[in-house]
Length: 273
Image 1 (spheres, one colour):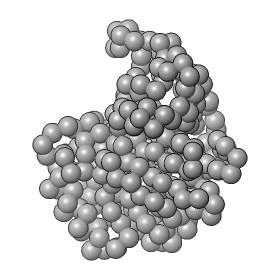
Image 2 (cartoon, helix red, strand yellow):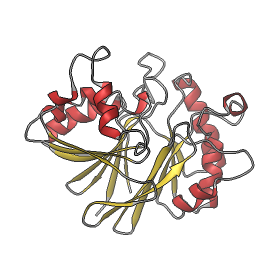
Image 3 (cartoon, one colour):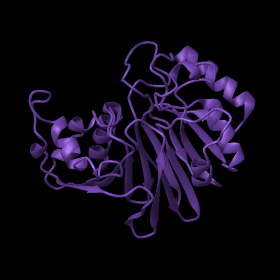
């Protein structure tokens, strides 16, 4: 059974709806992984709003939502995820970085509370559950689908995910900072032999020195890691909002000149694995 990956939000930091962000998209992080009738969602940035509308059209009423972390650009679409207001729907929200900070439900509840939002979390009438896990845990949301987890280098912590099913694998590795000249051994082993890696490519190597400590990586480092780990395909992801369509086109061309098995993710793009 194929794994289908759809990108609903590919930007980092802040949504950027503008005429300069049409081709690659302006929504923040949200990726859907479909395996048969199972739906896995990774992050709940502004892209999850359109995903929710699509799920309603497809009559999909259950999914697991896996969070890399809870910075705004990865959760601020959740209050607008309309399926969560359906009493007949069922969703589980999972996070691996908040066990010492009161848990993920506390963060989501605070996000939807006065004075910052007019509708409380309790207004979501779906069967909504929250689960905190320890990073490194292997999750099995349904029989036959494994979701491996690993820590990432990001302020406050973040989690990488590797979905495995039927001999295929997809890795979601965003919001992580590398050390130039020192490949992250944890990431290398985590992505080894994967069919598709979605990697934090916020900056270029030239931009990176001014961004050290911000918790992000570069498209060049993504290529270096994926080639060393025998990865089949690389999706550049978490694009800098300052990178317009013109800039992104140049980045994608430069990346493909280095390695033919790389592409820049776009809002609405579907990839079959």
